[in-house]
Image 1 (tube, rainbow, N blue to C red):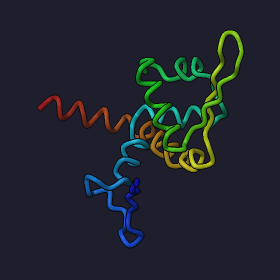
Image 2: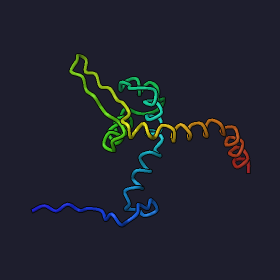
Image 3: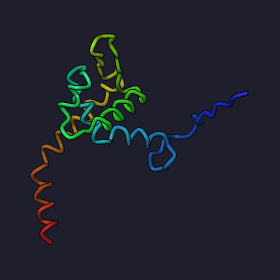
Image 4: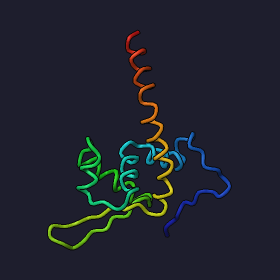
Length: 127
């Protein structure tokens, strides 16, 4: 006999609790590589190589892990084509597309405030 544990419908998600699934979701969508993958795929599906080329500095291992995690969480679909050489395409799901405005806002904030952040770092480092 197998048992399936089911979370209570009466308990509200609380990311401040270490065992809450919502914390894992925040970890996934707040990860720098996940943010960059979502932003890249916001403009349409891409092949693995296109993602690797666009996201400067990501290792093959990290890109693969990130894509698998996003796929597992239902944010990205992976489509393998039986061609020679093999072709794999990645695309945002509807759920993944619902993140685009959020992460685009983070990107806009980071790029818009970069000068202030760099100045604050320089002041801090000069102490």
